[in-house]
Length: 103
Image (cartoon, rainbow, N blue to C red):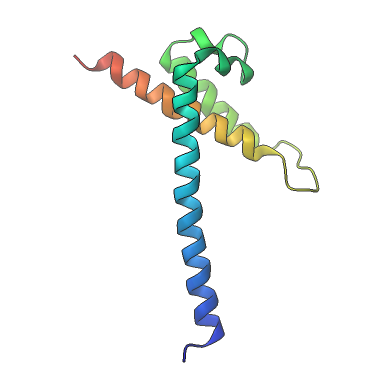
């Protein structure tokens, strides 16, 4: 029978992998929503809906860098929405840039 520490390690690893899959799914879904309705990007920063892909990427990277310095609320809600939106905008910007470069 495995020790409880082995079970805890396996459980932790399983939860980490599952959380990564869920975050990837959320980021992709949010990026698709941004692509369908670009005006929703203006929530992140005004005027972002009509920005070029390189500007969108730069703004998303800036939002991710500054997200760590934002204050957190005691009940857990804070920068996770900002980070999710920034990662989705970054993904969308990269896809738009790839589409521009492709023949």
